[in-house]
Image (cartoon, rainbow, N blue to C red; front, side, top):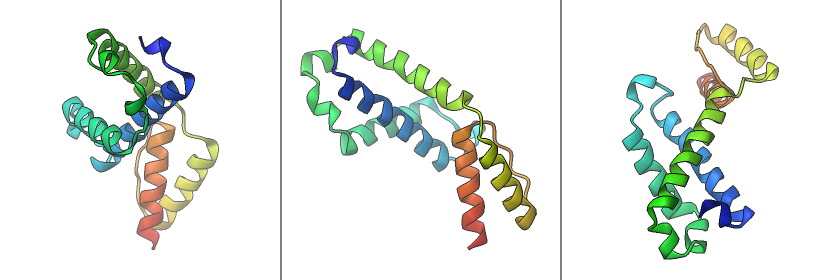
Length: 127
């Protein structure tokens, strides 16, 4: 069912998953101990209900289908894995190292999205 959707709708679904996942992780300070899949799912549902136009482009029978939900869960796993496995850029590493030196901090980060969070956090501390 998911494969039958237009590429635009599939891109929008992927974007809503990644945007809401990164926003959820930021809301918990990227703290693994605070992570709850149930909370993330609630956050994603709120996100797509309020911000995503794709939900209106999918027929109700597909939205209610168990098969569609299984395919979305699989897509979620793929998107989350991609986010968590994408290496921070060299520029991010360099910029964060400079900011941490100025601020005397020692934040750790494991992926590009977490590095973006840490970098923004450090920039905000400088203000």
